[in-house]
Image (cartoon, rainbow, N blue to C red; front, side, top):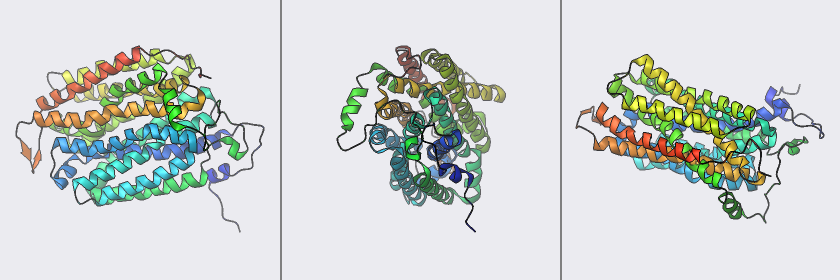
Length: 443
């Protein structure tokens, strides 16, 4: 008797009809495997937030060094965004995703086994650079497998998948680390990433035409030995919206990931007296609200065929809400704090509009490169803010410590978090100068 195939495998290997678009189940299955690597990448991105005490004690480091250790992921991630866009445009998403998963698994093993902070940082760098291919590749697949009016929704749902990974790196990871130790848990994550990479190589295809279906892709392919990757980048950068969509998400994403992805847990423990588990729950709630906001903003911008107004509303709301949280003279009530974090996270979901915005602002054949530039911008804020906040925390340290680990007070955190507000204001200004596309693709 022949072995039974999984439902997804059956859908992905069915005999197609060449004169019709791909079935929704097939399209979402292809997209979902790519999004799974993005989920794993987001898990790794914010994992240090619930392991701050363990990492500081294990490697005998203070806030500045911890911020740098966490940010090494972002250094790799940001550095890969433009190359990823170029590679995806030239070689296709499947190859890029599968290779990225293999390298990310190697980096995860290195981080899990690292005897010192230098090798741990190298592991984080490899992880960030490798999973940095997931977002652009997922959007590239969406451009081929979904109609254009579904692109912003697919972008929002991809962000939601990433946030699911972030939530998994909250309370569940905290419990796993407490029960088994951070090294075995990180080793198990490396194995999971290898499994995802194998599934991508087996099942994902770059375009519906490879399954015999009609493609949704509006532009011409640029792959092939004669394609000039750098000429594509130069062309993308001639469009002002490409620069503005590089700058606009930096404050929104930077604030969310600097707080929810690293400094929120120690802040809530030190200033609000929360347990590490409760602080992780609040940070997970922030990221979960971000996950919910992405699809909503994406769907609304698709429906109304307007990008700029919704982006401005979300960015302005983030500025106001983070200002209340950071500038409060005394600790807020726990319920009020949670409500503000939820709304700030939801409003920050506006950044997902920027990827459709960037894609529509350039010719369709350069979609991968344009989204790579936009995603590079979205992570640059967090990449710079995480270590900068750590540096300001060390400057404001009053000399207190516990168990050989530095303890920072409310005044130190407030001073360090002021830079988040400045970045948010600059990002809002950049968004205000963008040119509306009305959800129409530049031909």
